Image (cartoon, rainbow, N blue to C red; front, side, top):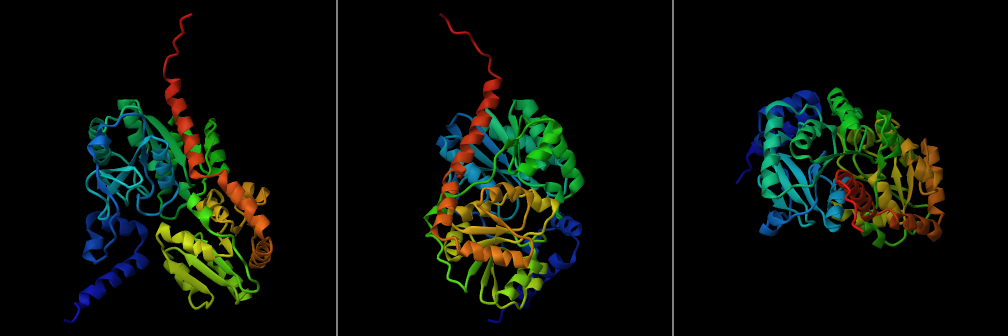
Length: 432
């Protein structure tokens, strides 16, 4: 049977639209039409979910509800790591799931113990460029009232991963007395795909009203402190799974340089191109879904390999093959504020890291855990110095990683949340 020509044409039309249509227009189309279904794009559903058990609905105790910036299945990053680590500490943890073809339509339990709560009134396209108000806000509030009753949610901390959720958090705080924790992950207004004005306004309100301010980098902590408050600095951390990887064994003059992360406008493809041409005997493995601009810029360079997006479970085997990890980001307000999870995972594996000199990485550079470089020549020198460090350098990096795991971060966050609830309880005098 000959294949339907439309089956090949529709994905090509979808890709053409992503390349050529302005972002705002694409989002309007997606809100009006089921774009993925019309163009034959099938996104995988979240794997491993199971129905919520009666024990989970009948449980009690303090709960943390994540109001997310990324879907649960998108990448295993700070929100997912922190949620799973809080479950391991005995808390009840919930994660909002927004409307999308790949998202569950009913409450579901992840193998980590986190429970996904569908909020069908809000699409995944909404948080970057819309204000949460009107019917969407009302419907989200109604959904949480239902979940409050079903899961017996009383002492609750709402953990906001993007300012988009500020109106909902304020409403739930007023109605139920839930605590609001703003976990500031990024300089949100600096993403090209975000509507800066809407997010800045919501962030300004959160910086004044949230019960607890948390920042993932010193740069973000400095920005939040402009409100006159002192945020909790809770940097990213290491996943212990990377600690089992053997130490690197560089063999000059051939080296394998690795990168795992987003390949978007902040990735300095020109720097990588020059470095790859200076060292044609080095191999550059880039893991991530590249934008069209990155694909075009790196096309035809024989020692640069674009491996595509990989499941989190496949990253340790790739890391095992890296001699040095590189983070060649452009210097922008966005990257200066970013505390890269992959830096910590690299250190846990004993791998040295060479990165462009962003402000957020300066504390690690001062400790000798990361080398900073601006040009291709500086990257070349720094990579060679890393390759010559030997097991002593790997040992220092692993020692740091052991003291900076997600379990450590979850303990700190739980302590700060517990203090919020303790502060509201009256102190009674003991009897003699």
